[in-house]
Image 1 (tube, rainbow, N blue to C red):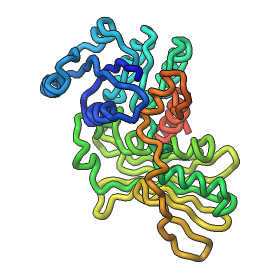
Image 2 (image 1 turned 45 degrees about the vertical axis):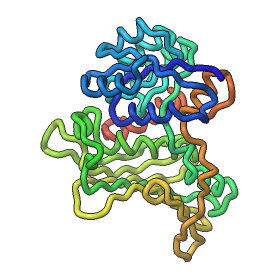
Image 3 (image 1 turned 180 degrees about the vertical axis):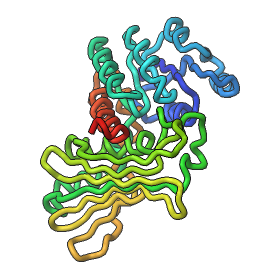
Image 4 (image 1 turned 120 degrees about the horizontal axis):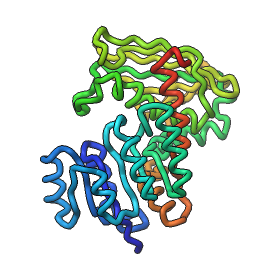
Length: 323
């Protein structure tokens, strides 16, 4: 079995999650973690204890210069993606980057151009299209179970933001945090992947008086290329239950992904009922597809062009003057 030398930049929640994924035995290759970089010394020490043969760094450029790498995984805050990825691409290192791709559409465009110029594999960690519920949704849509699509609603509701497991120094900031960026990006990508490109027609975002604080509420009208309406409603800091859902209204029925992965459906005039989504449909983890593409084999990845398209929508939603 081929061995892929993989380095990590960022050892937070997603970085450690990817380390777990890299240890699986169904990836089509053996993953050797050769190095990691982080500014948190405690995190680096914990990594070194688990991977004694790997090198550790606090300077990512030193890692890129000194290590032989087949794949670089980037899991730093969004504001730093551009700097890290561009340095890797200059060295023609394949990159697997967390979402969102960048911190602006201009950065994303430059990263896409650099990746194409470097001629190396580039991927964004968009996982939802590989989830069983999304794959089943796509299957039902292809079968025209609910007829022609009339409208899509996206609901993002968070009583607390950030959520209890999501505490870090940047996720509450307006510059690179907030639920539009952190959660909305998943659904923007799913909609564009399943239904087609999104254009933002109108976006109203409510920010707190604190000039650095992230959004509290968003209402947006969007549409697909075929004219289908897409409505976004988002709110945080309220009394109630978290809800992250997409509802697809058709001429003959409705399909809904409730709370990420609970697929529901029903005909016109009937209640929504659960739809079985066998775990065997799963195409996860995304790393498996990335490894396949590195080896020149078929694999379903979403590259920097997908990241750029999603970034355009993010920017239009967060900066209404651009919509």
